[in-house]
Amino acid sequence: MANKLSQQPWDTLIDENLKRVFDEDANADLPPHLMDLLDRLDKIPVADGSGSASGAPSHSQEEAE
Image (cartoon, rainbow, N blue to C red; front, side, top):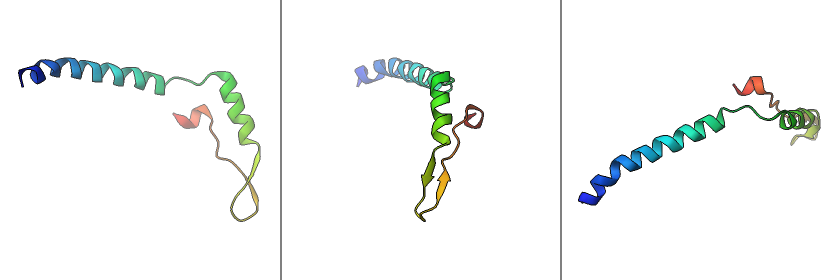
């Protein structure tokens, strides 16, 4: 049980640092070549279940924020 108590601060520190790193990565801008690819994919007509073609949802950087 004493070992469990001594691990608590390290576990908390690791958890906080991992969360910080993943949050920074999740909020980072996509590289321009990926944004260009998403824009090109948005322009491709996609057939929905009813047989008519419709555009895919937009993935622009402004909408993600």
